[in-house]
Image 1 (cartoon, one colour):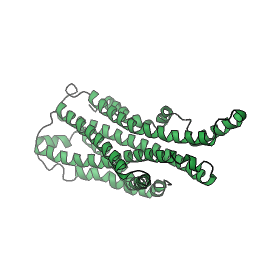
Image 2: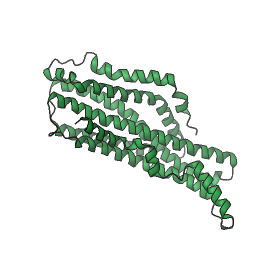
Image 3: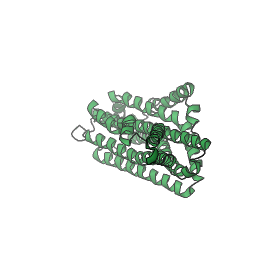
Image 4: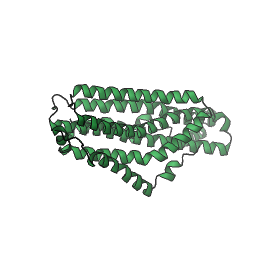
Length: 317
């Protein structure tokens, strides 16, 4: 399978149109005929200094999700079609469903906890606001789940490729295709890491900005809702992202090492040439890059936590 959909779909015109359309949605949701309520708390909410900052952050989130949705789901479909040819469809679907359940469970728990910590006013305006906020979270989850699903499917593809090494090791044409696929999946995995990190970061900062608005309204203070809550929020998403990414990265790296060991097993009588060939293949497949170094290159995996810290420092408490 050749992952080519991104390169075909992600072009300047598509990014401009998709980004502009997605970015306009939050402004339409929160500025046009909003709020419908004339209650004092509603007017205070939309006239705070943090309100437009919050809308701007939502605009960035919607732009990114809109840009990745079409090419992302096409890549997901390619991966899914390839995986179920070699695996039971129910096993794959079951894994995806479990992943969704875990993330939704954590997400709902975090939101329930924040609601218990902060007693927001119960009014018609809150119903109006919650309906729009639900739409924001659903749209964001479409993008986040797309990326997480792709990471999980790359894991399955790595297992499938591992089982094919003995069959293609002596066929130059198939071996060349195999190596290119390894590199394609590695690049896709890195792209997914970066996108998931950005989405999680934006979710953390947007949540910070949302509570910052209520702080300006006077619903709570720094003492009643400390910045540590937002930091923990970012930390949890960082851990979840890393726990999904790490097994896939390790499995994909092991495929490259298995290919190296199979193609160039250690030969004491020709050790120098063997080590040279093994190193060449390691460099090509990037198997000599450890997960720690790769996470440094894809620093965005830590960005939810970092954004939580930044949000706290900037006063989104």
